[in-house]
Image 1 (cartoon, rainbow, N blue to C red):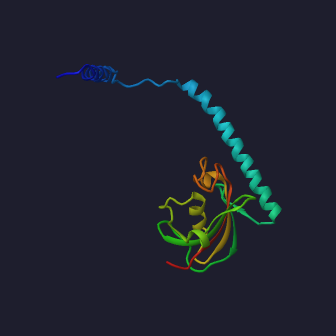
Image 2 (image 1 turned 135 degrees about the vertical axis):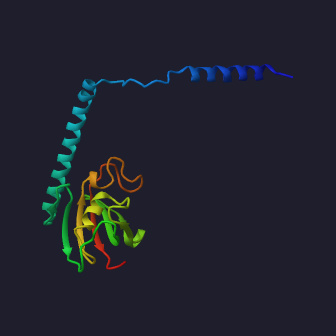
Length: 180
C-alpha cells in the first residue's frame, strides 16, 4: 500500500531528474570576455610581482646580515656550497638521499633528518620542493650546502598544512649522502 510520503518522494525524484535532463548541454559561454579577464589579470600579476620582489629583498638582506656569500640562479634559488663533495654531478633521474635542517627565514627549525628521517628523491621525478630539486643538480655526493628558497621554490601559497606556513621563505642546510 502506497503512503503519501512515497508518492511525494517519487514526484520529487522525477522532478529532479526532469530538471537535470532539461539543462542545456551545449558549449558554455565564458562568464567574462577577454577584456574583462585582462582587467582582472593585470592587478593580480602586479600584486604577485610585488610580493616576489619583497621576498627577494628579504632574502638578500637576511643573507647579508648573516654574512652568507650566496649565489643566485635565474629561477631565484639562493645557495652557498659549504663543503664540496666528490664524484660526478647529480643528473636528472638519479636517486639521491640527503640530510637536512629546514627552518623559516629568521625563525624556528621546522624539520630535521634527526627527527624526521633522511629524505630521498629521484631528481626531476619526485614531488620534492623545486628548489631542492634544482640545488641537488648543482652538487656532487657528499656536498654540504645552504639553500634559501622563496615560496615559489618551496611550498608556495599554502605551506605544507603542518609546520610550514603559507608563503614561507625557507632555509635548508642540506648534505647529499655518498650513497645510494
